[in-house]
Length: 141
Ligand SMILES: [Zn+2]
Ligand SMILES: [Zn+2]
Image (tube, rainbow, N blue to C red):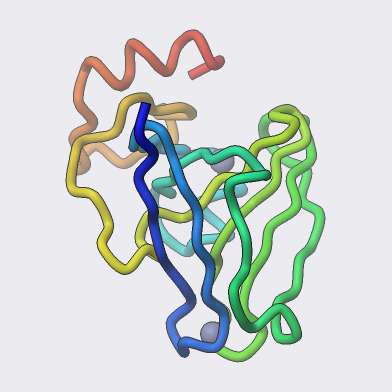
């Protein structure tokens, strides 16, 4: 299967990355940690294999911190120290994978999320597709 290349970076442009994915599937996480880390009701991410991801510039201004929260598993969150944009995370419970914040991509896909987890924390005024909520159940939704 052909891979799709995706490019992205932080708000100030110092950190840039590239990745390739077989299929673009986005996921919503609304755990309290993602909410706090993103400052918004939910975070939207794409999972890619670690080997298919690399930073192309700005690793010197990149910082990460370990976070353990609602899921009970730890995750390393990476952000740009110049502008504070959250960029990627490496979840402990998801070895070999990186999750990229979808809105850090140059051309964010506008397809609806494939699954959603911790939806109980999502405010009522945001509508998540029923299909995504159902699919999220098997990830502990
Ligand atoms: Zn930046
Ligand atoms: Zn989360």
